[in-house]
Image 1 (cartoon, helix red, strand yellow):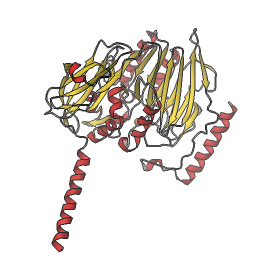
Image 2: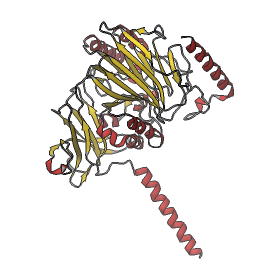
Image 3: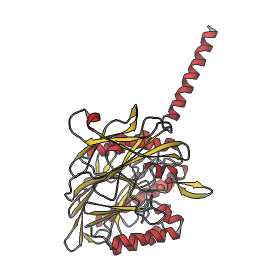
Image 4: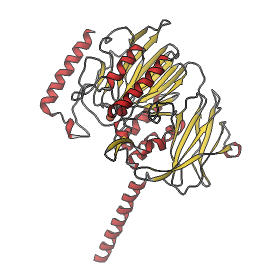
Length: 459
Ligand SMILES: [Fe+2]
């Protein structure tokens, strides 16, 4: 009996040990493709696809064709060799492969799979939309923590609620520790097949930077995992880029880099001004991680504001999509708050993951939310842009509409949000002792919330 008990105990510890290893190892590369992700290029009729395998998986290929309803895809697909590189990231050596789809046709759905020999991904499909000046994209603030357990429901609800999405934009801090293979594994797990079927637009945040030789540097997973347009200023091409999509110029900046290095900040600002000056698109949308206007009580505005805000105002940038402060705020430059006609951008600070901070109820804010995970549908139809903000459970939280007149003047409308109560409670602290408000601060916070609501009603 004693022996049997001891044997069972040993078996149990072996099983637990195996389970623990399995959990830790589940995000390591294998000979099956993973981290499959579709990205946009500078050209509307091109896409890039990037994926990962282990180093023994062999030369990788793509099989692809115009999708139809028949299932014999393999027989009809053409096969093309991928470009592959062995890349040593901070924690793993893996083979990263990429393929550049060219000459695609608007209005057509394509099917593809990636892999080699016996180890292929499932067949994915992606669509090249019609050129009709109308499209929708999704915008997410920081995912950052528990991307598998808690962030996944955000991107999945966003996908459920959205009929056709042209691409998804992630405004930085997709992970917490960017050197950790497991964290990127969780982020890719959360996005799953959506990442392989809808182009993703990554924006670098402070958490995408790690320390190398005592200096901050972009993590190795970034360049390996994403294939973005390499049209940024010299030396910053991986995280600073632009693309024109229908009638919108999209510009992605690297605010972390601007904060680290004044010379780089100057280079980004100069590059940005050239793009804004020579821009014949109707709309301009910019994304970077650090907000121009602070949304958090104990954090001031960043010096990126000094570099960027004058250019945004001068060239009438329309939307600025940001993250970093782990709450929701939407508003305009301080001189334009509450106005129907305006000229500068509408600023968003957003948060898609589970980390929550309080807010500072700053004068620029026209709509606020605390203790919320959310996502945004941005719908562009010719001379209008609507931004619909949803909570992670699918409830509509905020809805605005911008209209651009022929002379360039902009109208601003809040649509049917009077009935939606703003979430301004901050009852719990998460992800860090520094944000445990304590009873005194909670009372102060409540007072600030009441004051904010009073001011808002007067507008
Ligand atoms: Fe951040």
